[in-house]
Structure formats: C-alpha cells, structure tokens
Amino acid sequence: MRPAGPARLVGSVAAGAVALLLGLAGCGLVPGSVTPVDDVEFTNELAIPPLAPSRMVDGTRVFSLTAQEGTTELLPGVETRTWGFDGSYLGPTLRAERGERVAVEVTNDLPEATSVHWHGMHLPAAMDGGPHQEVEPGATWRPTWEIDQPAATLWYHPHPHGATEKHVYRGLAGLFLLDDDASSAADLPQEYGVDDVPVVVQDKVLDDDGQLELSDNGSEPGTLGGIVLANGTVGAYHEVTTERVRLRLLNGSTARTYQLGFPDREMDLVATDGGLLDAPVRLEQVRLAPGERAEVVVRLEPGETTRLHSFEADLGGVVVPFAMGGNDAFDVLELRAADSLAPSPEPAWTPSAHTDHDALRESDAAITREFELDDRHINGRTMDMGRVDEAVTVGDTEVWEVRSIVPMPHTFHVHDVQFRVLSVDGDPPPPELAGPKDTVYLEPNRAYRLLMRFEDYTDADVPYMFHCHMLLHEDEGMMGQFVVVEPGQDVGTVPEHGAGHDDGTGHDDGAAPASGTGPRYVPGADAHQGHH
Image (cartoon, rainbow, N blue to C red):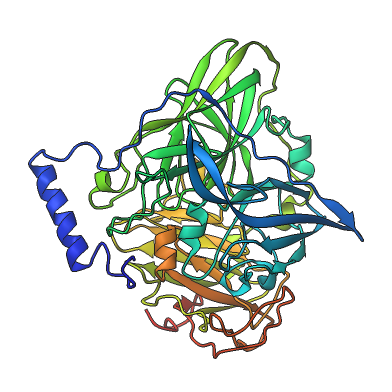
C-alpha cells in the first residue's frame, strides 16, 4: 500500500532518497534519466476510438457507457487485465453540438464504485461526475445537461474519492468532442479518424506477468512508465492521406508530462483545452501535463514519414528533473504519408457567433482568490468531502492567483469553467497558454493569474472540485471544493464520502456540515479574508 499521508517527497525517507540521487548526480553516477521510455518498432496501426452511438429521446441526445473489466494486448501476445468503457480499454468518443441537450447513461459493471467526470465541461455540479456522484457496482447514473460552450476537445474519466489514479491508470478514459458554428465552418481537417485524429498519450509499467503496476516507492510525481501508448497502441503508426492532419492530443497519463512536437518540422497550434485560439500559432513543441489537451495541424509531403516526439520536458524549477521524467525523450506516433495526398487548406476560421458572450474580461473581475500549493495541501488544507473551501456567486468573474511553492510538478484544474491565463509572474502567457484552459501546469514558485466566470448553475449543497491533476497528488488530498450560490445565499450542507447518494438530480439523502473559505480579496479592501 502507498503511504496514507502527504509525506512523500518532503518526508524524511523520500527526502533522503532525493538527497542520494543528487549526490550520485554530482558524482556523475546517475544516467540522463531514471525513468526512461522503452524503444519500440512502429509497426502497429493506431487504434481509433469509435464514435459513440447515440439516440434522440424527447429532444435529448442520449449516450450509454458501461465501465467494465477486460483484457488487452498492450504488448503483443501478452494479455493485460484492464478496464474500459464499452470495451476492455479506454472508451468511445462522444460527440455533440453546442445547443444540444445530452444525457449519458453510465452503468458500472466494475467490482467497486467509480464515477465519470466530464473534464472541461460546463454543467450543473450534480452532473459533474466528481467524488460526490460515485456509481456503485451494478448501478446506473444518468446525468443530463445542455451543451453551452465553444467547440473543444474535452475528455471523460473517473473521479472516485481516493481512487482516481487507479481507475484512470487501468484504462478508464475517453474523449468528448464539442462542435459549434466556428469549428464546423473552419478550414481544418474534419474527417474523424482520417485527417482529424484523436491521440490519447499514456505511459504504463507492466510487471513480470504483463500486468499493470502502480509504483508505491514514494516516487514523484507518481508512476512514470517505460511503455508509452497512443490510444492504447504501442509503437503506433497512422496512414496520412491528406496534406495536413489534425491531431487532438490528450495527456491521459496520471503523472508524466510530455513535450510534444516533431524533430523535422513545425506545427500549427489551433486549440487548447477549451477550444480554438484566436488564430493559429506556429510552434515547434507544446508541453502537456496530465489532463491538458492541444489540437495541432501538421503538414506532410507525399511519401514521407515523420514521428510525433516527446522531447525532454521543461518542468520548470523542479528538484532532480531526471527523476521526474524531465530528461526523457522518445517517439510517440509515426505518421506515414501516402504517395499522393489530397489537398488541405491552411488552418483558418472565423469567430463564433457566441464570441462576445463567451469573452472573459479582466475589468469585470471584482474578486481575487489566492491558492498556494505545497506537498499535498492547497492553502494548508487537504481534501475534506464535507467541507466547502470556497463559495462563489453565480455570474461573477474572478481572478484565481495560483502558485506552487514546492520544487515538484503540480498542475491546477478547475471544474465547470474554462479560464484564461492572464499572466505568469506578471508576464503575458506564452502562446500555448493563450487559449481557453481548464488545466495548467504550475512551474514551481511562479504566480499564475487565471480569469474565469461562473455562470448558469447554482447549488449550495453540491460542490465542484479544484485540484492538482497529478492523480496521485489528488488522491492523497491535494483537492478542494467550491459551490456556486445565488447572491446572498448561504453555503448549504455537503455530504461526506459515503454519507449520501446523489441520484443525478442534486438531492442527497445524507449530509455533513460545510464550512470555510479560502484566501480572497476584493480590490480596494483593507485586508485579506480567510486564512493563508
């Protein structure tokens, strides 16, 4: 079993191990990486997750997903026990348009409770699929909501209290694509699985019996595997038949950060977590921490081959980056261009009709909240299912200033909203952080100012989450809760884990007291409120 508490990297044993690694590095006895990735032959066709079927019922598009056990040949001839949705590994791609009402019937055929969180989706808290909406074995949960946000590459994954890392690592994840007027009319590759290709990047460790293994040796930021998968495929290649191909990249790993690009060409970044940029940005590489997404467009010439490569990841000022995946470099996916390629236009698009409504303006922000991340705490607290850490008023635009104060990799993910990165240490964000985001990598000891607006949905009793998306960190307590309330409304009661069952309507049959507010300040106020 893993240590129950947060004392890992900064704990005495782990700190001693880090000190030993530093000493060995100083003596030249440590290789460039202690978490290397295996070299493989790129001989397996990239698996493309199927588009999930749906049916229209009284104006609602209804999907069905079943979480189930199975076995998967992650390596040739080796049957590995895995979990998946509607299959043995990963899940189908759900797809819907802005303005549609959707419902998802989630059935749990696993031997333990799980949940399904719609990562990046704007929706009611009771439909969010976090730890308060766990689905017991044999049960079915049916969240429903209206899609009202820009076209984007979102994803879904489990979020059970204290077990998210295990469930995602075993294979439970899938994409949820949103379309709108701007994306449908855009000059972008549009044929799913052909020139518009999902690429879920993950890393794994297999034991001597070929079974998935999660490390329990106190390593940070969690398990870093030597086997890298693209859509569950080791050594994957994709046949390209058009001049340009659009890759919807998702870092679906639990801990590893990737620095993705091509050694022999640049690429056009067209979208980040929450949707299209204002215009394409030509880049050589894009860093993706767990949970982050990017859409890139790559041009190929007839008959050539290139590989999506993960370069040594820039982790910022972390301690011993060679022990945290920072020195690892490896190929992820091979693209093989046909001898004749159909023409593709340069990436371009016009703004959506919703652009003005969607726009975030810093001048509208009346409140700034401060969040400080250390080892396994946010603002000095670890996760408590019965405590509300922040209460937000519906309709408000806010700035959340977030900083990691420890030299290890952390990220910050906020449920329900897409935010804009206003600045990093007072400077404008780099181009890859200039689009809509819901997850951001935090380089240690740098201040990230995030602009967000809380719209439409209120629930004083059912919270959303904010947390580190290094899933080991999340499971060990690096998470907090916030509710969105009406003006002047008090925070309600939030059920502790196991105290109540949410039926998808937001009503629970058990409750526990909620309390607390994190640091926040109103411009012009004399002092900060809350604790630091």
